[in-house]
Length: 334
Image (cartoon, rainbow, N blue to C red; front, side, top):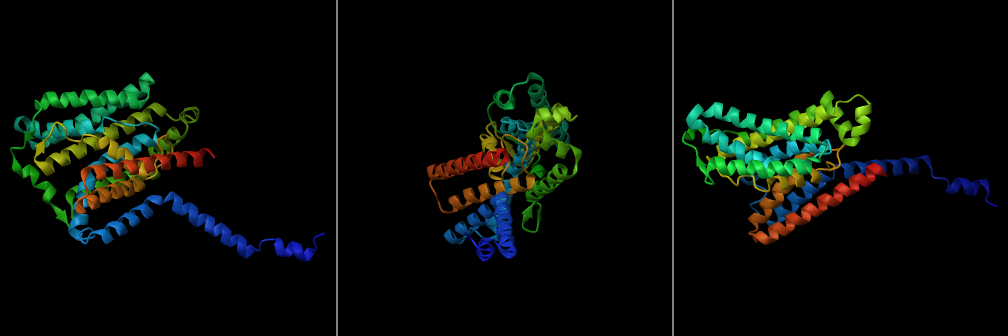
């Protein structure tokens, strides 16, 4: 028979319980912000491997390169929070890039840019309407969009690169504020704006509810179709912005521009912790995902890694991202 003294000895003290609780909170916080740990680990590894990695010039270049897919990833995050996906973003980027350059000789530089952005938004609207009205999953709808839009690009460009005639158009990407290019600054501005939108506006809050449980959201009076359509429009617009910025930087519009970029955008979004089933994610963590992905690619190239090794590494990152997505789903349902 245990004595009162034994019971007191075996009972955890308030201090011990407090330590356990504090440890649990810390571990939970680290798990939810895993992408920043992964980012720091990536920086440390490549900094030790190459003396050229952790330099202002290289990191500035990475920020600019990351911006193009990063802007696409912002739109992809919005759509995936709704539990949908958009496979047409790479093709929309290519079409917007082609329109931004191809229309300049007919209507001028800035009207051409506006038309390119409008085309992206309209195609996003079309994706949204077809998805919510047909009842088909967005994977099928946007896969069709991916094929059809890419075909339009080949027809419009006659399967050859379009060259800019007004070279002042290519001077804008050369504007820098400190070590950051105007392209990187636009990307960061969009990150902060859309993170604010998700956290502080009615549309943002209800977008999470739609992704978490569309039927329950509908019963609660939320217009599910409207929110999904809005996010598809924004996704198309983000792809168009990336396309215009890319055309400014290169001075050309390639019919194959943005090829498989939708895949890299999805990897970055999932790596940042957004669930493919919807209802959870943030633009802020997508930023971490795209920076990590870009730094890995940059570090491997600085080490003169063969292309097949780079593809294997990126494939491994994709698998890790999918495992992470599965883990997040299990935590949510568990």
